[in-house]
Image (cartoon, rainbow, N blue to C red; front, side, top):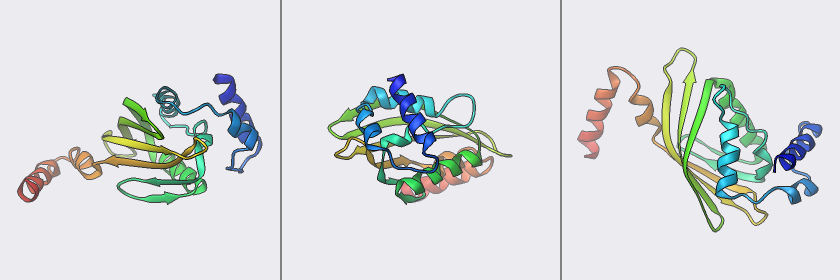
Amino acid sequence: MLLQENMIMDKIESEAGDVSVAPEIQERLAELTADLVEHLWSKTYNTQGKPDWSHIFPYYHPDIVFQDSIQRVEGIVQFEAMCNRLTKRCESLRMDLSNVMKRDNVISMEWVMTMSFKKSPTTPLYGVTRLTLGEDGRIIQQRDYYDLWGDIFNNIPYFKKTYRKFLSKYFG
């Protein structure tokens, strides 16, 4: 599998700027299993700081639709740009995975993403990702679910208590 990933990366790097995956490379991509996703994502979010998504981009379909609590992004060019923006904004970004599962064409995983930005404390976000595989086996849809405001507000002194009171009063 390592040789396969290296060949993919060599091909992508040699086509600087071309986000499509050549058919011969697509044929050599390993089937996305729960174990492979856990392996690939573990390499993406390393403990040395900045994430590197370059080795997983070939697993995304050109028509990827990504959606989370903040945004909806369509197409691989926009998806790669979003990932690169996040890398630039963060001082460090780490993701710890658990419960990675596959059923039919859906892979899901629970995660804790720990981010640090300039002049702000380290902030953990707890979430779940659902990856939907297209007919060609690549990721055609990614939906990330997380409580952005709760996780961030919990780390702001003096505001945490007010936020929790508000939630309790209006939402039980």
